[in-house]
Length: 355
Image (cartoon, rainbow, N blue to C red; front, top):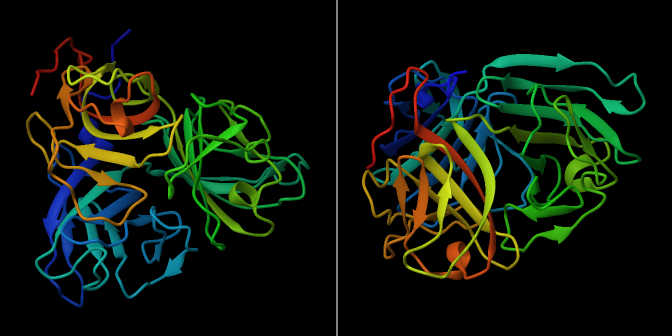
């Protein structure tokens, strides 16, 4: 059996850097990976200024934005800027908004492909809710839209054909926070993307039920199943050589913990689960070599921070060079989600090289 089914991760994920041009008609942004990428989930951050993270997807439509660092409800065509189109090789911003196209400001966009639309009408079964969305079973990623029914536990089709390791939920209609299911913290606990909270109990969020290869479960909680509310869920499964959603224990040492992923990372997000701290974000475009110094925080609008030597991306994982509690506290518990630049070994046996 081949080590990986994805020899070119840029066909499913790319990081793109660009400079805003301040054009009120928007700007077309082209990705630069080995493969053209028409992304379905696009996450943009103004690196220069303290502005919100803008999160859009093709299921809701580019003009409907939510903010990873805020509990705000979905905004339609916000004047601060979302997208006017998802293009075959990039995207087009809608205007000159500060979130994605202010003049002379530096931006980063993180871009994931799902690609295949689905509609699952299982709501006639009292245990299930209808869902629609977009999925790539190859890349282990789906975007799921559904209408909540808080009165009781419900199951929802996710399309992956594999068990999700991580699901990110947002109630689009209310100011409920972003709620995260992660396998490492279990089905009776949650994390909050727009906050610094440690892992906390929430038996109602997922009805204390682990997702299956077909369905995820939501309970009597408005964060994940608001009554008559429009909900969105981003679902992720591990794909060998391409993506990993795992956990590790820090060692508090500058010769830090090494985490094996099975690929050279292109993108990494980390959260401490047993203590209060930020969601730290790194990628291979803002830092093209080691040591990685450029950091953003998913739960915070702060501009990019570059004053610390954080970590190395290696050919098969990542290694911490920082002793701080948010990423490498001695004995601390952490989760991460990571996507590949290159698999450790391609399907034809070619190994990845170190940075």
